[in-house]
Length: 80
Image (cartoon, rainbow, N blue to C red):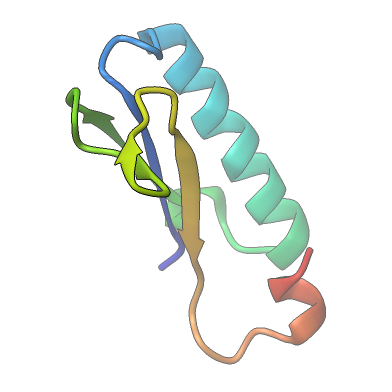
């Protein structure tokens, strides 16, 4: 199953923003792979102060999205 994990500092994302991100990620995944929408999972984690570093220091602005799809997808799909 495709899993997309989103991390952001505590309080950066409100519920409506999370819903919008989940919808956009789901749409992109379905368009790229043809997978059913129900297969796409999006998780959110809030990073407490001091949990993210850039170079050698704490960076309170770091956020990111990491996605994983099943083995066997073509390179074109993986790079979409």
